[in-house]
Image 1: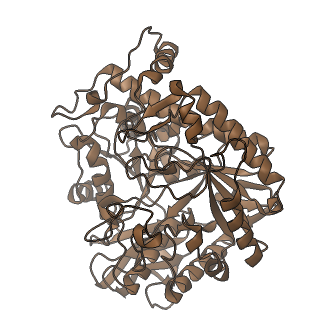
Image 2: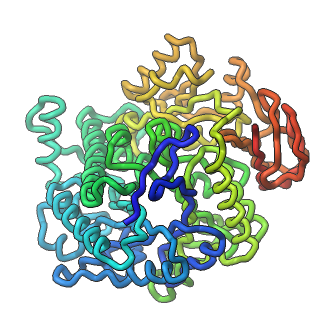
Image 3: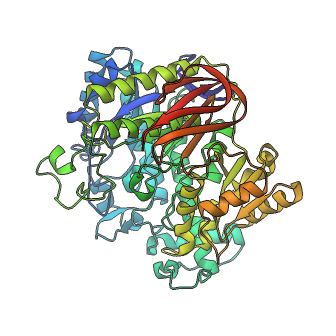
Length: 596
């Protein structure tokens, strides 16, 4: 198999394959029979994520959606790799130098669930599924995972395997299936042991799910409910880490392993499962972390499609952020058309204003791709284009855009790493504070709203974890804390700001949402540089500066210093040395520039 690793190159994490720096841009789809591998191969792409699952049981407990026709271990005596291997061989036939990343769904098949009554949880839809932190799940799941890796190592395509992605839980993203922490009788003893170990207290009891529901009092959560929230999130992180370690050991620590995790800024519930990043951010078992572009407000134009993860903290810890860009286009159809007669008509609807509907035109679809790309390249994040139902990018114009973007990233590999422009503002995520928040409360909803406001201030920012404030605050001129019920780590970060003389703006329980105007006034009062006076989105970093237009017309990007500027896409300007870039831009369009 190929040897792979993540190393710092030119100041940022970079994927190396067999010792060579490699452009981390990839393609994947849920429905391989509708794949467009060949189009992406022709566009210059060489990395492909291929899905494989232990089971055909749904990845979504509410919609009952499963993309898999076959689960490897549905018949425990006869593992079935046919679906997985068919598409690997199809890719390699068209592209012998392709690099394959198996994306493995570690979810137990029905026979296992039926024979492990002490290790299962009944979802809101009535189905039994594995408890995400049971010892049997961790042990048997690791054994099944290792058997898949050994099968792959002995295959005729093993020489093109470049890394691995492990997935679990709701929608494969290590979330609890009902966003409820798997609270059930089978969790009682495990929770009791954890409380004894951490707090020295005997006879802990499980909280009720109702204890997390907001009824008007933002501080109405019990100490026991807070403890279970910490337990559930750390237990999920531990399960993912255990599986990652199994992959690392079976591949002699010679291949990269990644996962979905650390959705610090994407809030749903204290029992979400994704708020244990602090425990695994330095794990030697993980090389990259992933999340989609944030889905807030159905990804409307005129706003930033921000990061769910604290991507700048992950980079500081040497981890690659491999972002899932599942960008809808005018070609995106309902799942019912992609696989007729397989899914009910009322799931993933595309009519009206819907997360699942793409822009109505080809031009706006180009704008959507550029918008997402500008954010990711300025953050030095890797990208995989997730053609979810297949055919979303089946258009010469769209594919031409994607080919150009691959060439931009190829060129970026050769850059000297200099970043003449960087963010002055630290935007702090406080994942432990979720234990203080009640589901449905204004306090939990406001985090995404404040993050959306941050993207419209005309000032770029870095997203970070409060746990590392002591190490990074000296790099910033100001800080924003959007979590209104901070943890002890969050309070400590604010105290550090005060001690170091760094101005900060913080949400509170009484005033939990920070508006664009409030944040801008805070910046003005503290001498923070504005790149634009309008509520357009600014992208800055990694040797680039860009702007996404909320309204069309004449635009000015005010730089904090004189730089050499050249156009990448979106605006026709001559190369110039300036501290103010002037250009025309249509509504919803994005312009990106090289800066040196």
